[in-house]
Length: 345
Image (cartoon, rainbow, N blue to C red; front, side, top):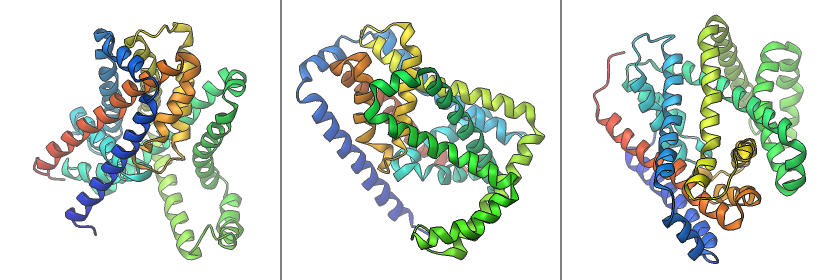
C-alpha cells in the first residue's frame, strides 16, 4: 500500500500536470485575442456570475442527495450533509487522478469515516455507477436524436469521436446487462472472447481476466437485484441524475449570459448537446481533469455558437467554475472530513 508521503507526491505531480496543460491552453487562447477576452471578463454581469458557482454547487448537492438516498437503503441514519461531503471529496480526487480513477477509492474512505461499512459503500457506488451511466447514455442519446443532422454537418471532424465516446459508455452498460441476462453471451466472452483478447495482446493474463469478469458480473447481478427491490428510490435517483446532468450541461449558457454574449433561449438544446459532446470526448483524455483537451474541445465546439472570442472567454469562465472552483472546495472538504473523528460502524 502506498504511504501518505508517496500519495501526496503523486497528487502534487498530477496537480502540476493539470496546471501546466491548462497554462499552455490559456496561453494559446489568449495570445491572439487577449485584449478582447480580458475586456469581456472585466465587463461581465455580476448577477449572472453569481449564478454559475451556485449551479456548480447545486450539481454537487444533487450528487450528495443521490448518495444519501442510495446509502439509506443500508444505513438509515445517513445524512444529506454526509452525502454532500462525499460528493465534493469525490470531485477533488476525480480531478487530480488520471482518467478520474481515484474518486471511488476516496469515497470508500469517506464512507468508512462516516460509519458506512466497506461492503455497503462498494454496493452503493456500484448502484450509483449503474444508474448514472444508464441515465447519462440515455440523455446523450436523446440529444443526439434531436440534433443529429445539424451536428453531423457542422462538427463532422469531431462528431466521430462523440459517437465513439457514446458507444463506449453505452456498451459498458449494455454489455453488463447482456452478460448478466444472457448466459450464452457470458459463455462466449469467458471462452472465445477472452482467447481472442489474448491473441491480440489486449488481455495479458487469461485467468486473471476470467476471475475479474466473474467478480464484476457477481457485483452487477447483486446490485441490479437490489435496484429492482427498491423501485421508488431508483426512480427518484434516475430523475435526480437527469436534473444533475441538465444542471451541468446548462452552465455554458449562463456563462454566455454573464459575459453579455447574445444567446437566445432557443439555443439551449444546442448548448446542452455540445456540453454533453465535450464530456463524451473527454473520456479519451487520460490526463488528470482531462486538462488541455477539455479546454480545446470546448472552444472548438462552442465557437460556432459564441464566436471564436466568445467561446474562448466562455471556456475560461466555465472551466474555472466547473473544475478549479469545485476542486478547491473539494480539497477543503477533504481536509475537513479527514480531520473529523471516525463514526462507529
